[in-house]
Figure (cartoon, rainbow, N blue to C red):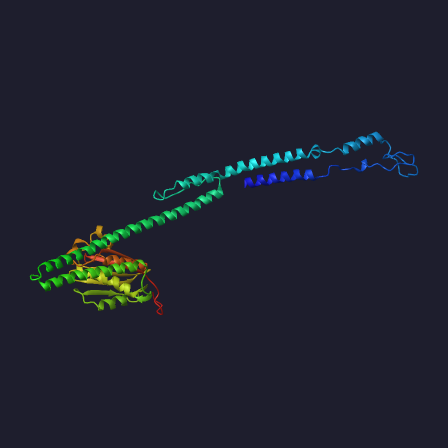
Length: 388
């Protein structure tokens, strides 16, 4: 702003100088105009009375005095007589104005050089990038603030991409490890049978290979389910009564242990029915595997959510492992002992389904001492009932 003011003042000064150059060089005064000659053959001076002139003479005015006054009035300024001097003065004014403008502009733009130097030294792999915000330079300060916001967003997105890439590498490593064991078992058994087919026990071989194939198929299906969950909630969302859905799903199962239900109907959620059934099936399979006598399923509404809980009376899960069980391919010792065909993906898929429905899934200690898995889904209004 200061540079703009200085430049404007310089232009005004230059304009004044040019107007002086263009002004007339002689300004005649009415007192310097000579009157026509009189009858006696000489010009008449101002104030002199001519014969026949009825005007009152101006007494006390001498011709010499009038001449001096006229000479003073017709004197011209010095620079109007010298165009070269006028141009030189205007040139000096322009040079001074340009110098002042250059100095002021350089001072105002000096913080930009600092910003450029800091921006050049930014290392994306280092701590969150940031440039200093200069004081007393409001426009540049706002610019630096905006740049810092953009740098923070880029750094955050970069960290998320790095975490996703690490997760993908870890997932690929885990999948390879899980698939390698059944494949290696299948190959060993088939090679032994090929080396000595006469002594190979065919029924036992077929049963073992079929178990390995079933485990491979289970891992493949779970991996496909995880991949679908990564692309969003598959299927069409519906308003449904969670208690009615749970009751219908459990009635179709033939479990090892009985399931005790405690359901409160009218607990409505918005969800994909097939995905909620998959989540419930994973929780029930886990409970049936670890329970000793009974599995309990509860559905009840809260103020803002609907709670689905699946409990067992087994040994439970230690506090330190209650988050780890939701990691992919994680199987505790008790789980490996009870089910050698497990993939370690069931609980991970269940949590992904819960998060895809804007819900949560966690584990706590049950009333019987076992594990209690609790699903919370946002509660909605049932259509046409007036209840929520």
